[in-house]
Length: 101
Image (cartoon, rainbow, N blue to C red):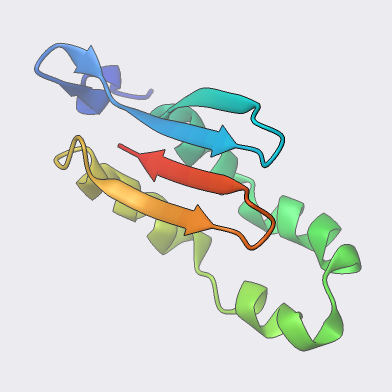
């Protein structure tokens, strides 16, 4: 049984906020509760086995070195850092992606 209170911080469920801004001007905000992110990481091996078919051979080494169990544990620690920017990418085609806790 999962303890849902672990994912609460001061009475608020902790979510990752994913902001995507396309070069066409469209933007998206995707809330992703940490509990769902952790559930998706639990199926990491299954998803990776499917994705490996579409990854170029010279880049498969990066996927193979990910330990999904440890990554899943890391999200327990991240709940203490609300407001932290995890990722901020500005692509050459003008697409911006930001992930904030």
